[in-house]
Length: 220
Image: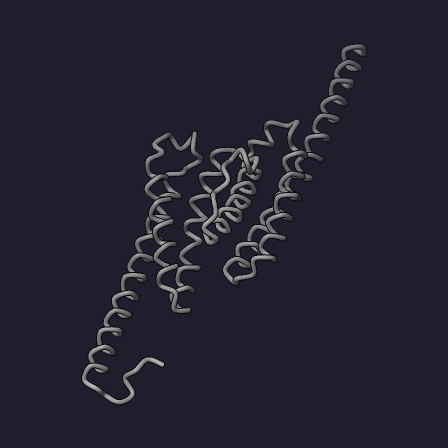
């Protein structure tokens, strides 16, 4: 019995060591993921504020933090697929793709970014949703043509995402994310259409007043 007790105690020590390694990896991974998400959010805000240099620096910071998190959990599949790493990868993808969409640049794929396909798809979906804010800012600044381009990007993204018809277990619930994008897209299309109609009406009215020689009708 004493021998069996000694063997059990030895096994428990092995388990303790394994769990200690798992715990340390989890804490390091979570810390890296938190930094990733924080930097990604700041990068997206910089994009909307038209601060490209700051956005680029924050994306670089975001990438470095994500790589640290990925390395921390690389030897522990249960952690790597536990959910928090997927969320961090998704936020990183969103920051990168939002920047690329606003700039009209080519979109890097999941291999280029070193993330899983589901995280890339969700990041793509959320990046398209982020374009609404940028589009509305463009309308306020009097840039309807660029706003129309961004709406086209949103529409193309949604059309492609809804064509990915796989179970939620494979895509991490992409269907629900695409439904949310559709709602954002419909509101954005409505806002843009209303603004364009107002601009056309205003232009037609000003043209008529100019033709009639009404004082003060010329656009400054």
